[in-house]
Image 1: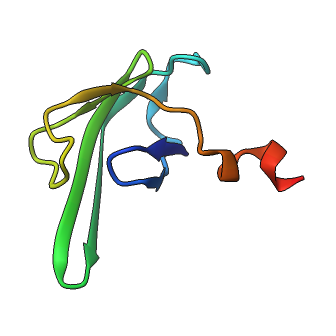
Image 2: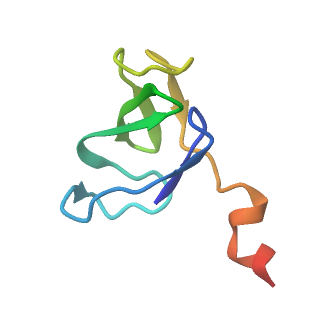
Length: 84
């Protein structure tokens, strides 16, 4: 799983996807598409994660559609050290 700055939530990556083994700048393939329905509206988050960069695709329904951003660290409240 990783933190998605566009959706402000964790997204799982299927274990059947290809992973290059790089924990610092990971690459997964193929692309990942997360769809959900909230309060009657459909939300789509679709991206490619390559060399630690999230490449948001044009069919995303959030404000980061078409943008690229480095994969962020987990928010402090989700890190193991925050759990005590």
